[in-house]
Picture: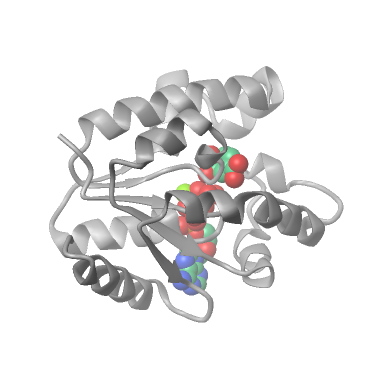
Length: 172
Ligand SMILES: Nc1ncnc2c1ncn2[C@@H]1O[C@H](COP(=O)(O)OP(=O)(O)OP(=O)(O)O)[C@@H](O)[C@H]1O
Ligand SMILES: O=C(O)C1=C[C@@H](O)[C@@H](O)[C@H](O)C1
Ligand SMILES: [Mg+2]
């Protein structure tokens, strides 16, 4: 069993939104590793960060990704920081991986009103988001088999572009 598409990208790229629509369009089940973690641990991700720390969250996340990659055969969305794990990046080499990209301004706009993203809470969300992109874009690109830009595109347009990109590489 293996996912038909694994979706990665920064917070606000639309991994959950586009992932769900993509799964519906392909007639496949959708799974989100962030939701798996909340269910398994029994508390919101923001509480895991504040009560247990980011390092513990990353440990839990690595295990959750490992399990989901082995169990799920539909569309799988990863958390925004899952690619920080070298072990996860190695595992992703065997899968079709869609990198949804988003620029800093659009990413800040999309995530700006959400208080439940622990890494983006702070005095300067633009600088925080830029630092996050600087550190992670090379990692998203390293694991991606296709990259789809989401700036200025509605979620259903992104879904069409993803399907085109996956079809173009012989998969879907
Ligand atoms: N292409 C898009 N155009 C406009 N708004 C979008 C688009 N994709 C997602 N959004 C909006 O941006 C917000 C964040 O989207 P979503 O939760 O799907 O991102 P995510 O990548 O799953 O983030 P996280 O890493 O925090 O889980 C939501 O309010 C969603 O409706
Ligand atoms: O970008 C990140 O590091 C994160 C993104 C979310 O999907 C969650 O996995 C969590 O809030 C951490
Ligand atoms: Mg999400």
